[in-house]
Length: 197
Image 1: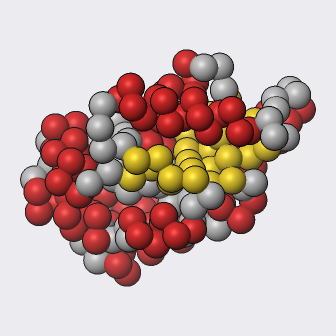
Image 2 (image 1 turned 120 degrees about the vertical axis):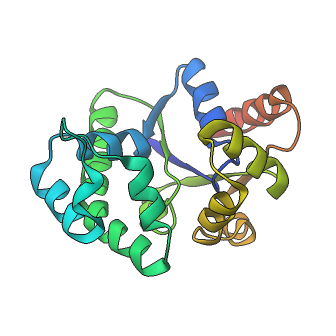
């Protein structure tokens, strides 16, 4: 089985790529969905997060305010690394379980969609890494529209992520998402054709 990691900075278009792959029938493991799962009902984890990022992060139903947590975590490099330390082990364990599940099911290719693919070490277990990239101003526009964040909040998050040039230098393949969605789909189709080789 071939494992392909997909990553890219905030607003680059990872979700557009993985959505298209799923429409094509490929198996995609979404790290962000796994993060959401581990925050739900995991009392020990939530307790550690509250102790480090604030008791007020949970609402009356015990649900975590992920947006506020992200805001606090991205405030400094130290806070970002702390959150990663708290969550990474569990995330990596669950991704590993899903990869094994796919292998048992006889899946030929599995894609792992993870914004921290390189930083978490997940890229080491991948046969290929596809990096999705787009011009900075386009990325800012997309995130502002999608998440309602200010330009300042978006650029702060971008600064806390790996630089696009470094990502590109570590990629097996690069998808340039600077044009129309159909242009991106053409690039993906081209890469899909290379998988069986």
